Length: 65
Image (cartoon, rainbow, N blue to C red):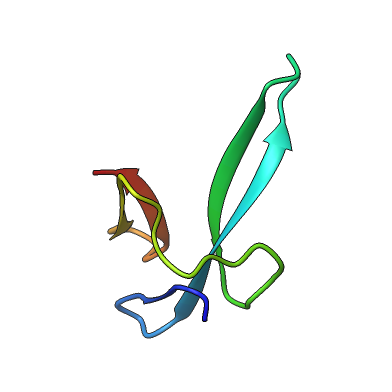
């Protein structure tokens, strides 16, 4: 089951990750929220991160704990 976050407006978001290759060739994992479950959905928040909600838009973001 994908990690689910419901914001103050009642909209559900699901946490995903993807490994991308940067211009220098280095690989980096990115995390993002989407309204639907897509490939790359995560079951929990990665270690060392916490989920917060932006005050202005209500979008969830990951922040280092």
